[in-house]
Image (cartoon, rainbow, N blue to C red; front, side):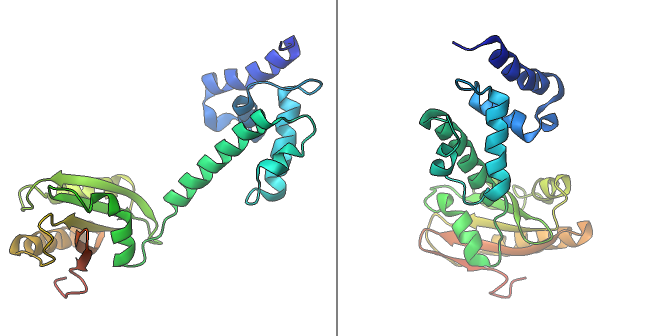
Length: 219
């Protein structure tokens, strides 16, 4: 059973989160909410501060065994913390993914390779070519009326992206740009020049490979 002091220790960070928002919590307060309660002889705040000390010493190599080195911290609570850490690592890696060439784009879009309809997608990049977001623009046969520059560039403007890469799949398996593919590319390229957001490439891809319109000198 939790003591009154343990309940109060946990309630303070939780109340702060509800009233002020998560960004106002200190590191140990965030850990306290993850833990939920302290242990015998050590309230949740004291326990959280010990865990934060491990974060500060060497966050990158933190693992379950290092957490278990904290006196009194059991497997259940240590597992909660390391799971939260691993989740943050995975999303930080995802958010910092860098697109350096067409093969990186092809890898990013692997879940669309087997689609039976055409998916037109846009990848939004910051000034260092880190991927900000990948978004589906349209689903269906590619043409200029469906792929409007407004829909393609609006997210780039909202997120202040420096450049974009567009791509679409060919369910037929044929890696040859159509007349419509080339026309859409030129239209988006011109729009990007006006907006100051560069269109870096347009990929056509299938489950067996891809073709870059920039590499093929269509851009």
